[in-house]
Image 1: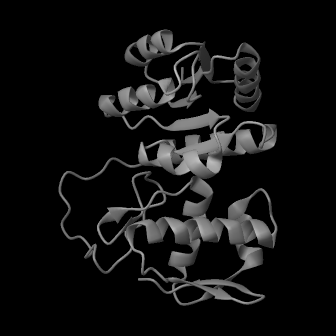
Image 2: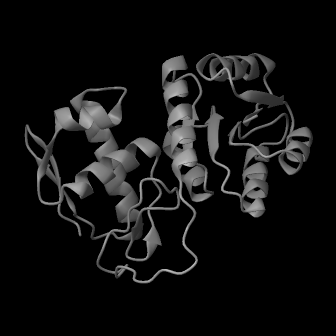
Length: 235
């Protein structure tokens, strides 16, 4: 049966997260681990569809980082959702750079947001297609945005990976699919799913711009259309 790992040293939080997962998807087997050693042994022993983990485990401040590195070494593409008390503004980009799929900051989300994020990652992971062994033709990475919503090591811009959370990836994919057209706030509400208001959409777009400018300081490919929405013109 499909297995999920919850790696969290606080028993109450562990039970809460595991309970939300079991309620949302009763068919999943949820294994709970409270420390790095037992979690690491399980990661080598079991094949997990998704791992939910904290950064700090007991006295090990960066135990979660070590576990993400272990998962990456396996080369299985196991998705990781980080749930931590560390400030999201600082740690989200760090965790994405380590190939974590998304980041939720404790005390700032509720059951609905956790479940939506969890299920979104699960659906995306299950929908991935194996990469072809040989690519017959590839777009020029210096002039084109390489974007595949089903894969996590994308998008690529000017040959470099742009680290974005899933919601921002969905917004980017929507804008890119309609290059040159204005995508209204109302249309983007369907992509955001939760927090359906203009301020929230603007925050996600700001996240996208910042991520692109990390790899390309001159990036200016998303136009703000006052009172209407946004338009992709970046390539």
